[in-house]
Length: 292
Image 1 (cartoon, rainbow, N blue to C red):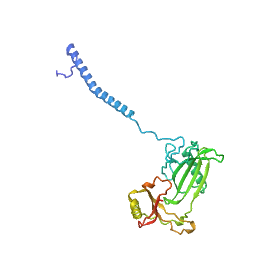
Image 2: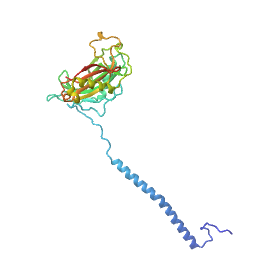
Image 3: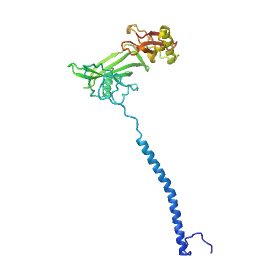
Image 4: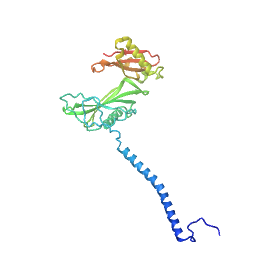
């Protein structure tokens, strides 16, 4: 009869079978420990890491201003609204409140006021919203006809033509921040479509336009060369004309508008920025006005 390798067979003496069972139990317990201990270690490590991440301070919530202030850069609301062109524009409080001006907190949000502004623009333009870009939103304090202080939202929209802003054209809407009533609507739309030139791709870059302006200003004001500061530069329709009757077909060009100031004049609110217009085809400066 062949010998079996199964040590639990009944022909073995009882004392041997008991020893074998004890060894089998010991091996089984060791296997359980070998599996359980690493698992427990992993659970402990994960719990520790989770506790560390949960205690790490996250980003602070956006600042929300519930009342108006006289600071020109105060943001109203937790986030500025999306404009019709998709650009996020911050709202700034530009109230000219003095010591005798009572500041008034808005009762409607900037988003609600903006919806009313867009609605009135749509209504007054044949039921469709013209191509516009919301460039700025201001909140200030004014007075009602009864001389009661009230908050006022002012929305500034620029006209767009072929996706580029028209320098002189746009719409301004004011909304009472207490009642939600539209209190002002000013539409400046003096450039006819036929006056715009063909929107060709620029032959020079924006940076090249800036360098051209810097070179021209340094020649005119050599002692101020190190203090010249470019404040903005973009492609715009140069519609700086005197009247609609003086416009000819294609007479309004697309150009780079470069704004600049001089460092020691920048804090003087009575002074204006310098403005230069640069031809996108030749790089020549077609107009240059210095800060004054």
